[in-house]
Image (cartoon, rainbow, N blue to C red):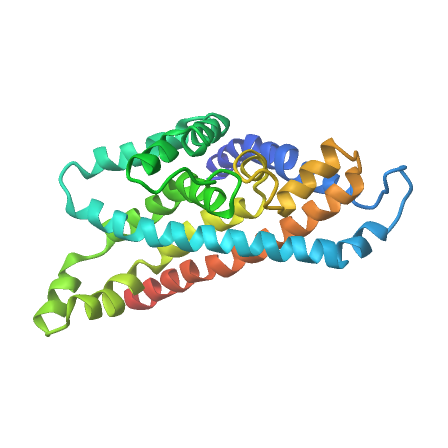
Length: 277
């Protein structure tokens, strides 16, 4: 028994080293830099600056856009995942949906610049149908549209898995008891797949908070988020202390979101244990 335990502990060493070197150490380094100003002097001023109206407005803007991206991604992904579970060759269709996520983000951003540009395909189609050329690129619409497109696979996959694990006999029982399609969805299907929804929202909302490349290329810096501010402080103003301070608050916000969206999984596990007992 002791040899097996020692073997398991030996297997854990690479994992622990990886976590320490690439998770714990970078976070500690970010926290360390957050206490220094642009001249390298120790200060708490960066944290005081973060609570000024400029950064508070930026924080609210980041959360608002992340919320919009998450909501639209959910509205598109849930029915898509539901239809996937009802179609033949579902694994093939799922692969085709996930496949674009393997393409480099920068390439996809430039592809949308070509599509939404003044002389792009979208404006050409609008001119053909008589609407005329429109300013699509560098708008809130283009930013949210491209962001939702990029994050949709990360929302579909956990919802699809939750729907696949659901017992279909529960739906048949609801129908036999006279429940309508909407009532069956609201009282049976959605509650049973809520863990997948939470996981999908977590996978979309957290990275959406720190977007910066899309805000620059697609939104033309008209959308300013905390991710954009971090990029500016590190690469333009060279104020690593303020950039690190913003990153610290982002890490805290992400940890809170992960805690809140992960509580449902514990409830499901506890529920299963109670049933087993």
